[in-house]
Every structure is written in structure tokens, then in C-alpha cells.
Image (cartoon, rainbow, N blue to C red):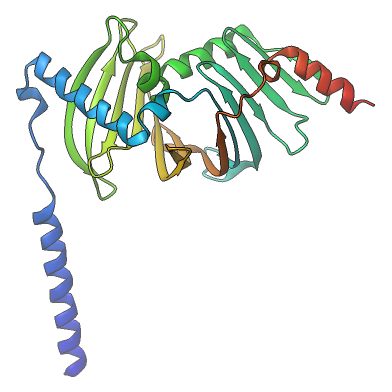
Length: 273
């Protein structure tokens, strides 16, 4: 009897706790459809301004370069890990990226604006034009690129997308659309104002819809900038990659040469000696 009483007591407590969670779950603060376009845009802009301030304000907006190391995992359609290793990602804002895929840096990809190259054990080659175009498109749809460089872009439309609970976090959604048909949604943690999820929806030439989602978590402050140390990416609900950052350095005055073919040619010739 004591065991039954204890079980009944525990079950009652659990039911009460679940009821309180349901009761405590906030309703939508305001139906976004009830807002006039100007009101929705103003609210969306205010939420994004809060996000920029939470990310570091002037330090975040003034970031010049970054040098980060991470463990990378790629996932196959079966859910199995298809690739695992350490990467070093160097960026020179706004549009230069150098990713080294092994500790010796013998496999490297460099994007520099409308140019790009790849280095492997067979030498250096220019990236195909479609690869560079894909990188530029990805950059325009990147959450941090939007927050730093695109909010004052002519023709950009901001909308407040409402509030809901996602992964036990109360979030506000903001929608960003441009003249070229891009549309992205950003979920911002209401408690911290930090970006939590970023969703890009596109359609191919046949009308098939693709949804790419990036989830940011485990934020830590570095040089006054809140940095997500875990970044997970999904496509149509299936996880495709995950990054666990181990270290980041900001504004180290990375040389321009790192983001050029010259540096890759030099690295290859030195490796052959």
C-alpha cells in the first residue's frame, strides 16, 4: 500500500507539474496578422536591434576578422556520420572565408568575394562558378550577415512573425524578405534576445520547396561578442552537419594574403619539398 500511495503521489505531482507547464506556456503575445505592416515592421526591427545589442552591440557590428577551430560532423541521409574531423575557419568580413580541413592545412577552400580556390594533395584549382554563386547566395542568407550588413538595404521588408515556445524556449519570430525573393525567418530567444534558429525557405525551378534551418546554441562571450559554440544545420528536417567550436579569436588582423590563391600555391609548393 505504501508503494502504491507513493506512486500515486508521484504521479499526481507529475500531472500537476505538466499542468503548470501547460498553464505557464505563454500565449502568443500578439497575433502578427492583427498588426498593420508598419507596426509589424517596427516591432521586428526593435527585436532585431535587441539581438544586435545582446550579441555585443558595437563590438559585434565592428568585427573585422575571426579565427576559429571546431570539430565538424557531417551526416548522411541514413543519419549515420559521414564525415568527422577538425576544421579551422578563418573569416575576413564581410565576404572572405578560408576553411582548412585537416591539421596540416593540406585541404583548404578559400572564398574571396566573387573568386574562390581549392587546395588538395593534387594542387590548387579555381572553384567552379556555380560553387562561388552558391557561396554568395548562402552569405546573403546568413543570419549574421543580415544583422551586420543588410538591415538598411533598400527594399528589405521586415515582419513580426509572432511568438511561440520552441525547445522549451519562448521565442519571437522575425521574417526578412528582399526584392529578389529571398525570405528568411529568425527565432530570437525572448529571455536573452540571442538568435536561436534561422530558417531559409527556397523553391527550385520545378517549384519543389526546400527548408534549410540553422540552430545556434551554447553561447559564450569572446572579446565582448556572444558566440555560439554549437551550430547545427538541417535540411527539410534532416540533420546534415554539426559544429562544436573549441576556440575563437577575434580581430587578430589576419593578413589579406590568407584569402588569395598566392597563399595556396605557396603552401602547396612548400609541402612538396
